[in-house]
Amino acid sequence: MEKFFNDAGIFRLGYLKNKPKNNYEFYFFRKGEAKYIGVIGMGMHAQKRENSPVLSEKPDNTTLKLVEKAHVYNVRTKEYMGYTDIVPVSLKLDHPEFFALLPYKVEKFDVSSKYEADNHSIVYSGKVNEKDANERLIMVNVFEPDGILSVPYSHKIWTVKGAFYNVFPLALNDKSGKWKLELTDVISGFKVQNIVEVGRRNNK
Image 1 (cartoon, rainbow, N blue to C red):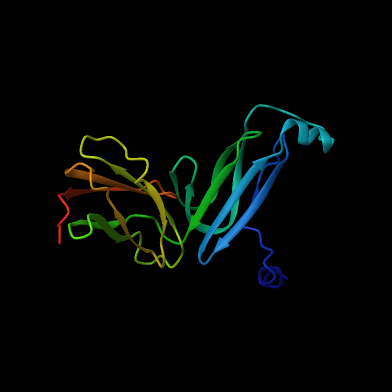
Image 2: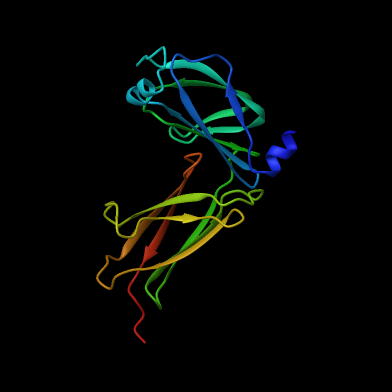
């Protein structure tokens, strides 16, 4: 029966061991071997419409029991919760929680970057994890030589089979010097910094 539901795209990744005071909705997602659990508390107004017998603004301290062990990350807090099938949670109304269940712990994060003078661009590439065949989101913050975050150049990039590559051109009047790239894995919060020495564009 479980295989029938899985084949139909209907599956469950976990459940609460202890009944909470309030009502919560669970959302399960699966992308390759990576799995995700979203928990949303039904707000006061929604629970009143559902005629819930108990309404409480206090946190529900309970336990999320997974159907199998995984490397668990709290995506909101970036906390690594271990390789486990028991996840302590503190649920609150109108405060969503989001957990990632990965087949490995995020430990390796290789990045290389360089400046290309011919097209006055910064090029960077790397791998989040050698074993990762799933799409993952990387936040790339770009800092100018004076340490100021460059909002126009900062961006997000998706990995393909654990790898990523990007080129972004600089303006002709951008400052020369040491630019910093700060790349953050959105799931784990793991960060890597790279320094790129930016010069002047080669005029042909």
